[in-house]
Image 1: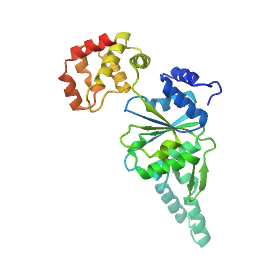
Image 2: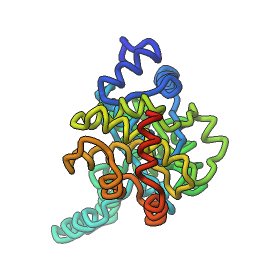
Image 3: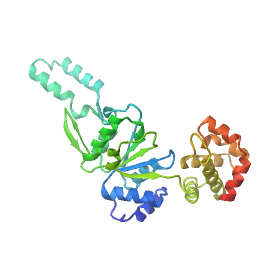
Image 4: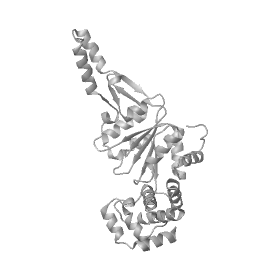
Amino acid sequence: MPADITSADLLRARLEEHDYLADDGLATAAYLSLAMGRPLFLEGEAGVGKTSLAVALAELLSAELIRLQCYEGIDASQALYDWDFPRQLLHLRAVEAAGGVADPESIDRLDREVYDRRFLLARPLLQALETTPSVLLIDEVDRSDDEFEAFLLQLLSDYSVTIPELGTIRAEVPPVAVLTSNRTRELHDALKRRCLYHWVEHPSFDREVAIIRRQVPEAGELIARQVAASAQLLREEDLAKPPGVAESIDWAVALVALGADRLDPDNAIATLGAVLKYREDQERVRRMDIGAMIAVAVSGG
């Protein structure tokens, strides 16, 4: 961690320099994660800025961002390393063509050669162990299964991995690790205990307005306030996917692209695809009195 960051407030200020506006709780969790050298586990609705925090930390620390996108069925080999079989096969054929496998000693040497480091394809987790400095983003870990979660627990405990053909590879400096989850399933307590945990809430109205203004400077104050207020009202509806701050930003970008200087019923309907990603949600909102919703949003904002 940079020597000039000695408190959560200073970290929050430095994150703002990289266009990430964190609230007190998130800034404190991130600061403690850096100070204590512990992985940061962020849970929250999709689109509240969990992934963006890792991006901002990488920029702040001048570190390489290495991202592992989790999905159902992911296993250790897909996340850690793989052997480049086509290149290994080409090497074997080249040696055979040169007559280099004529005796048992040559065969043993060839066995060692094909499992040389140059034929190893490093996946995100191994890349993070071998890269200093780096920020390792393990995104949507809740999509992986129990076995992979147990593997992550071990990796995040000692930041090393053993490759049978090469030996143990240990990180000289452990990466800054950020895990995110949309809570599609509960993770085991063991992984949570290994990390510092923080639930990321949707931003307050004022902070969402500030985020929109920061990310979409072309949008005026009025559009930013109307979009933020309307998004907060939509989050109170029973929608399949309530809009996150990422959708609010997209909504403001869409309005700016249409040349709008304010949110009104017509352009709100026209740009619903930027903020609502399910057909059922869009149909539900179209049945609402959009004009009244915007009026309420504006009066509340």
